[in-house]
Image 1 (cartoon, rainbow, N blue to C red):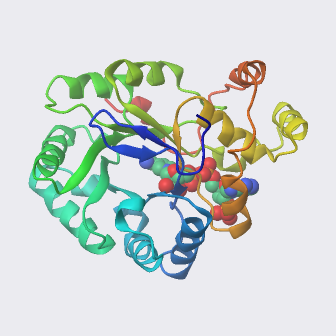
Image 2: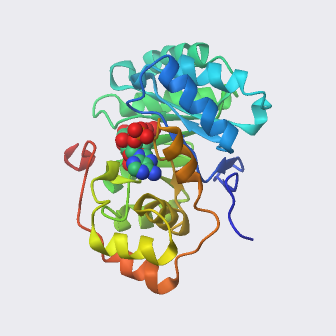
Length: 275
Ligand SMILES: NC(=O)c1ccc[n+]([C@@H]2O[C@H](COP(=O)([O-])OP(=O)(O)OC[C@H]3O[C@@H](n4cnc5c(N)ncnc54)[C@H](OP(=O)(O)O)[C@@H]3O)[C@@H](O)[C@H]2O)c1
């Protein structure tokens, strides 16, 4: 069946997660976040990605509540930040995030970053939250293959998701393969590489061939690779444009051509040096 804006993937715990959503990093708290989330939900987005670090959880929650959508129709992710890691600290931070978002059960709670001395205890806290039914899924973010291997040595539950930087210019194939092998869904953050390659001629040629924008081609590539993608946009034109990726297909040859765009481009933080 062809993909649509609310298409989901089944996670390793049986929960269905939308394949496409809105990122909210560097959205100002208050009106900017509220308006962007309301617009996205109106357009049909069904996944919203926030974090305590973004300081906009409250506005995300308010926009969801005001949208008129049933709670079950929207999938909400938030994350545990570094200064809140540890067992009791993570439990406390979760409660605070849940209170700020205020939409009931959180769909996905992620460890934002693999903090060396604390990540094991943080994961145990996330497992407790899962067992208590206080969030529906738990996962990690910015975990490398080595971090996942280490987690496998003590985890009772396999993470449902690993949210990592991933775009046609940073394809993370080894990490993607490792995630697939153990049943972890890859979620691509900065899927537009923050616009840094919109001028790339190869991308522009593909966009022109399909009558699409470079942003739409990048996002369609991520979808066809099987990733969950969460482009961030505050501009309502961008919010609408990014959702216009469900009515065209990149051919196998075009996908292969885009495999050649790999250039190790990182626009966010790099966890590869974290022991
Ligand atoms: N877990 C982590 O450590 C982590 C790290 C980074 C990001 N993330 C998540 O991933 C989300 C997305 O990543 P990101 O925000 O870093 O970058 P991104 O989605 O790759 O790029 C966002 C930028 O692209 C612009 N843009 C969006 N759509 C566009 C379009 N159609 N045409 C031209 N420009 C467009 C946006 O502008 P406007 O906003 O002005 O519309 C914004 O400046 C974040 O918001 C966050 O939720 C997670």
